[in-house]
Length: 94
Image (cartoon, rainbow, N blue to C red; front, top):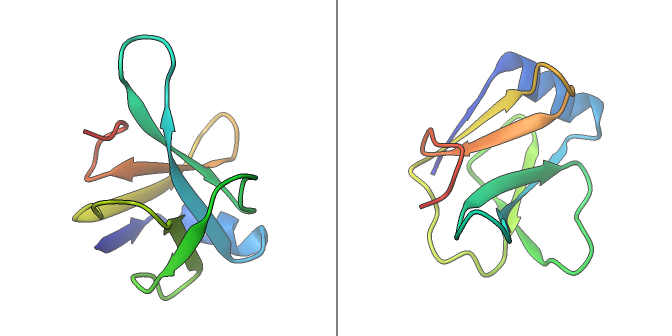
């Protein structure tokens, strides 16, 4: 898996402790839409493993994730100053 992080995302992750947790978030409305969620601390009730694909910060993905993307893109939301993750360039996971 290749991690493509913008400079702004890398700086924000470093400022928030140098760790990024990324997990799948399934919507309960609108059919079966799955997106990615991120945080600088692990959410409760989820188990993660560290991924060695990133050199500038510690990246954690769900332990039971069946398949890794070819690329994980990270950028900063313009409105909320929050790291957003895109799986193979998409806002949702197929």
